[in-house]
Image (tube, rainbow, N blue to C red):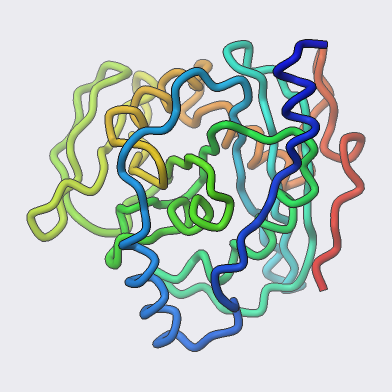
Length: 252
């Protein structure tokens, strides 16, 4: 076992307590504007050993959800740890307030990690958000960890059509500000929407998303997190399933 791996195990994930999640939409909007000013848009990512992905799966019929985090070694992108948290969603889906619905479960899963990631890719927006604090930025501040937003759809702003070749991108502009890019990750598929989460700049965010792609539209960390959240992460050579890796934490 490498020294880096041993250090990562010792450094368990810590979650800051920046505010309550039980707030009104007006209070949530004020929190987003306040915390947006604390987001770092400078890259603190140099040579990561571990890159994580997070996602959530919702059972609408039961009002239950599972938040999952997977940690991959870099550059191999080998799965080394998976954790999950299960619980009821206390807020309905409201565009622009996704973090108040999903972040508590994701943070609960992250708290159970024994391997601390150097970078987290989030299936959601970073600063590409009306108040510049989407799920990726919100999680980055709570975890004090570099994060990147890699969403499947556009929340705000406009962009030209990016080139067809993987790696091509078009800037997303909102109110005269570049808030992210529409990035082509695979030939013949729709782009993903990449933005600064926390402690990265936009070019670094683009670079790391592309570095983590392995022939799919989604980068490997969020692709596997999506599978883990849905209970569909299959056993592969040198990896473990979500069920085998963690019993999960029940969020009351």
